[in-house]
Image (cartoon, rainbow, N blue to C red; front, side):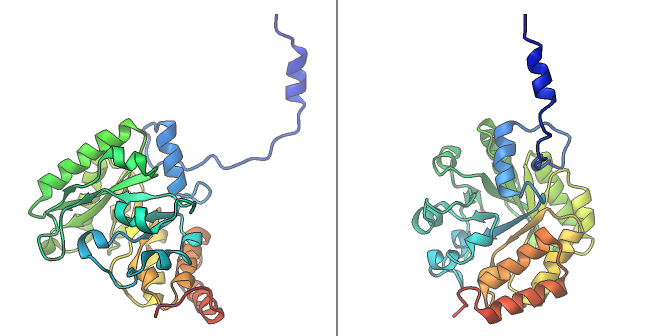
Length: 297
């Protein structure tokens, strides 16, 4: 018979300090432990938000301004990023395995700026992703573009394979050139991605962004998009977060900023601390003046 005295000892112990329950997905569907654990490495389990640093531009662009020396660019920025989004080549050659940063690996490819951008398919196997110890994989879909069918099937295939090993899939949405970047088609692309099994979705900010977020049953991360002045990028970040985004995946508006290290800290303060654009800009200017990090040449 069990010793009931032990029960009194357990009940009389001091109450333990409460800790975060971890990131709760925006879905009623159950999530396996490994999947949830990896996702909680990308999306901060305390705030439920993320600042991802996108540096995968080379897979279709070649050399991007600010990424000529990827390792040099990353060194002052990674301490302030929640996750890094590189290509496998960039990861292997420019990211030290000693750096403790969750990786969301670019796993689609096959296009370039010289051709049809939607001409894309799976470019990295799930076995390769596992070898690289990634936290998640990223696949682009092109809704309303010439190769829509292939990219949607590629997403479905990767969801099948990644789910088998508990690896989250980020669907990166793009729409046909003639459709524009409005809520109607970004909402359609995001919902299709979720319906096909994406764990979370990356899409652009637009007027009516809350409609995109509300109609998507999985978390939405805002794409940083083209380079804009720092005040506008901070305003963009604030607008996306205030309208329901789970974070940002920003590249050019960080590594092409006048002071990239100051910029990523300001963006993070908006995302995780709720700073207003005005407060974040003041923070950026103060850090820049103090020489927070390596400035753009």
